[in-house]
Amino acid sequence: MNLKSNLLKLTFSILLVFSIFYTFNFVTEKKNALADINNKQIVEVFKTPSCGCCYGYVLFLEEEKFKVKQTDMRSLHTIKKKYNIPVEMQSCHTTIVGNYFIEGHVPFEAVNKLLIEQPDIDGIALPGMPIGTPGMPGDKDEPYVIYQLKDGKSSVFMKI
Image 1 (cartoon, rainbow, N blue to C red):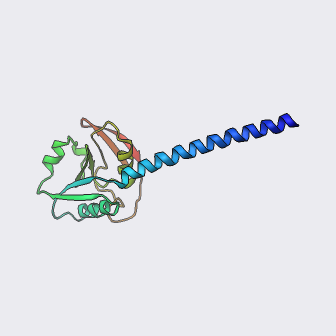
Image 2: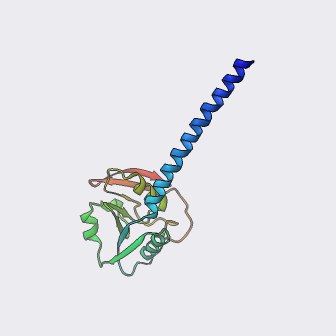
Image 3: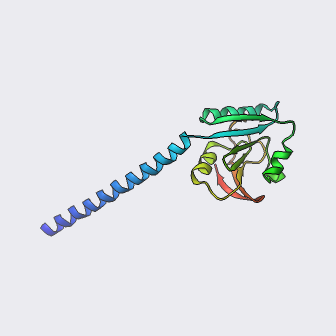
């Protein structure tokens, strides 16, 4: 009985140590990720002056505590070309954050993932103007597919 009791205590102690270690690492990683997100840099949104949904996206970014610089342009063709965003991946505005572009009404979950993971890509895109996305009216009626782009080629970044 003594051996069984000692084995039980040892097992419990090992589980406790692993739990503490895991919790500490999880909290530290989460805290570092949140610290990076809370120290958000300036983002620049290139949009046309009359687009209401683009302004809605600016407000969304500001609500998420980004410092937003708005650059109004008559045509966004030069920006899309500069960042090599294929026509089928384009939306009504382009946001630049650090070395990445964010094309369109991309939800915060995808922006957050991009900034935390910092993958070796040029940017992310949510083509078109899907209903229910940040800046767009209405309720979400289908999954959003966010693409990652590298050298003009796209693949799925995430689905929300």
